Amino acid sequence: MPDIKLYKTIDATSENCTGPIGELSSAMNDAYVGEGVSILLGDEATRDDILVWAKRTGNEVVENVSEDGKFKLILKRVK
Image 1 (cartoon, rainbow, N blue to C red):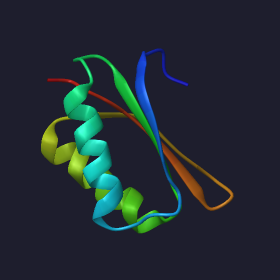
Image 2: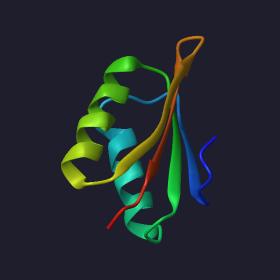
Image 3: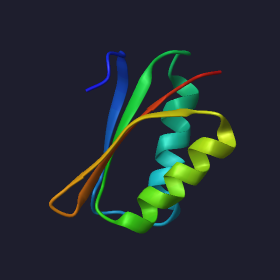
């Protein structure tokens, strides 16, 4: 796990589409610069959408792992 302070962990394993991105966006807005938000996902398409969202918004993906069909991302608020 990266050495950053986690602001929040979101379990979105039973959600897909825009729900997890909305939750993540809100949490990233509330986090301080340098803090991270961890999100757990149940499908690859939502993970891919979040990776695109992170690049577009300037947030850093510091962890992107998959295990047993589940995905875990940690994003760091950069600005």
